Image (cartoon, rainbow over all chains, first blue to last red; front, side):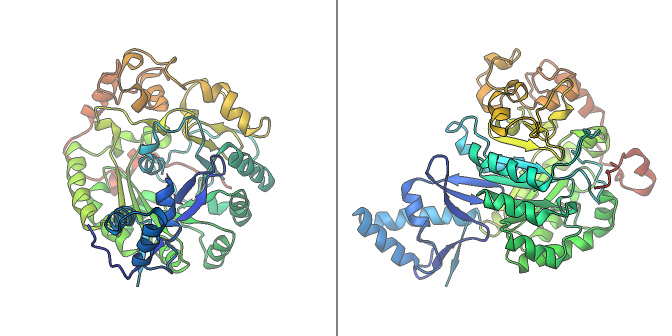
Length: 94
Length: 383
C-alpha cells in the first residue's frame, strides 16, 4: 500500500482548488472538468497538502488529532492520496 | 466535456438533486474552424449577443443557485474581445473557470492576462495527431498553432486538457493521439466519439466509426490508461450508436447543468434547440433562478412522469433517465420517445438500420480529397 515516500511533500496538483461549497458549507475539491465532495477526514488531509509538510508529518498530526494508531492513519492517508494522485489531483514534491 | 464532468461525478448521482453544478457559457457562435462534427445549432437563434455586464449578472446569479464550475465556450470564446473581463467576472462570482478553446488566437499576452484574471484551466481541442489530416478536418491550418499554444499554456502554469473528437477518419490514430497529448504534458485527455447532433447529425454517415474501429480503440485506450496511470487521466467516450443502454444524458434533464447561449437563451443542454417546439427563456427577461426552478423548458423532462413505455417501468429509469431527449427527437421525431440508443426502445430499428447501412470496411477516409464533397462543413457567423 505505502508505495509513497514518507519524506515527499504532497500538494494539490495544478488547477486543483480546495474550497467550501458556498451553498452547503461542506468542503469540495474543484478541478478541471469536475469536482469531488469531501468528508471531514479527507478535508483534514487535503488542507495539509500545501507542499510544505511531509507525508510523515501529516500522518503524525492526524494520529494526534484523531487519537488513532499510526498504522491506521498511514493506511488511510496513503489510500486517499494515491487515489487522488491517479486522478492527477495531487502531486508530490521532494 | 460533459461526459468528463459526468464521469467525475457518478458517485454523486443519488446524493444530489436539481442543482446546477455547471454552467456552460457559450460566449459566441463565431469560430475560425469549420469542423464537420460541430454541435452548434444548424440554425442560429436571432438576437444580440450578451454584453459583458449581462454575462457578469449571469455568473453571479449562477453562483447563487449553486453553480461551482463555469465552462467558457463557444464557438470560439477567444473571439470575444472582452474575454479577460468575462473570466474575471466569473472568477469574482466564485466560480471555477475553464476555457474551452481551439487555441486559435491565444497569444502569449492574452494568455497571461487570462491567468491574471483568475482562469483556472484550459481545454484545447485537437483534430488529429497528423497536421495534414487535422487541418483538413478543421477546415483551417490550425494544428501548428495549437501545438504552440499548448506549450505556452503549460509554461504559464495552467493545467491542460486535450480534447479530441473521434470519428471514422481519425480514430485509427488513437495511439499516436494519446502520445501527442502525453508529449504536450496534458493532465487530462478526453477522447470523445462524435455525438450526433447539429452538424454531426447531418454528417453522421461519414463520421460514425465501424464496430471494429471502436473495439480496437477500446483495447488501445485500456493499455495506455494503465501505462499512464497517475500521469495523464484518459477519458474515452464510446459512441452510443453502438451501445445497448443509452447515456444518462446531462445526468438528467435540468438536474445538474445549464447552458446559456450567446444571445442569452437558457437551455437544459447545449443541443436542446434540436427539439422541435421547445421554447427557451432568456436571461434578459427572467432571473436565472426562476428559469432553473419554474420554467416549462427545464421542467419538461424532469422526474419520471413524462416517460413513455418501457422507460416508466424500467429499473434503469433513474440511472439513464430514458437517455437523450435531443437524440430521441432527431431520430424518431418524438422528443418523448425512449432514446433509440436503448436496446429496449420502441424505435430501436431506426438507429439500427442506420448503423447497419454504414460500410463496415473502413474504406477510404471521407477526408480524402475526392470525398470531401460528401461532408457539410459548417459555416460560422462572423463574431
